[in-house]
Image (cartoon, rainbow over the protein chains, first blue to last red):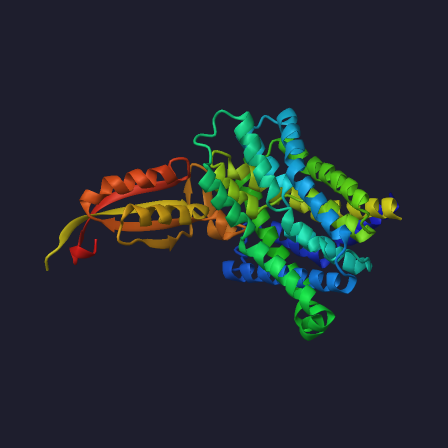
Length: 330
Length: 103
């Protein structure tokens, strides 16, 4: 218990969290502090590029083995199945409609790459190694949850209007699988794998040293967005929804722990798979839901994933999951 | 200068729907349209700004299309299939254009 508290305290006083908190507070105080849209996009591209490249370099050092395939399979199963757990919890504990609950559930099966990046940063600070290929697992976990959410909505709701037809669904899938973030993440991963340590040495000063500083700036922006979302959508946050937003990540992390144990991941890899399973999407899934389930209220799912679950994972979740991963993995 | 009466259709719709709508416009035979970014606004879901979104997918775009009056109904029928279930506004105003052959 002491370890958890120590880790949580260290984490809370890290620049990453303090910059995120600054953003939230600035937004709640209605400050005019903003990160220009194009700059925020650039920061996000940098983080995807750096995390993908470093993951690829790590895999090039250790080689591709059966664990990679098993991890990707575990990630796919987790992403497909977590929305069903989330949907059942939402229907039991909240008064959300089927469509809203399905949309929220889809977010909790998919992942937040920034939470993943923050977890890798915590691992680096603690000097704990992890399997580099989990970057590819992160990419593969984006989409299956969306299919589960659409299936849930179609199966349990009579009021979803015109269902998404086959051509639209195909177009939607193509957009999800080829969205810029995934292409950059996987592309950088492959380039890192091909070029290996030599490639890393060439661009190390760009992808390694500035990484945490850029992440701080990006988290400042995320804090601003989360704070603005909380300010404008607080009326949607009923106690049941807040409870779900705090409990579901822990449930997801438990499922991730099970998956990591079955695959046999290291302590660092276990933390990353737990974090992926615990995180909720706020980029890919909201866009997909706007196209496929427009009846669902975006204020609910965005505020929950970005305003509740993201800060929870960042501040309390990651240290908690690391403690559990250490206890289980020795 | 000689001018010709035409219709100006302005559609404000969620950014993720932009390509679906412009594909429909292309297929419906309109000769052109303009896509504009939307900075923010207020509606049934409350106030929002583009800066408050975590990605551009959370924003809105405005699509402006000018066409001959006789093409309006066919174009609106096609557009309605896309916008029916989504947040947004479709407005139609009269306008005058020079070089009518372009529309």
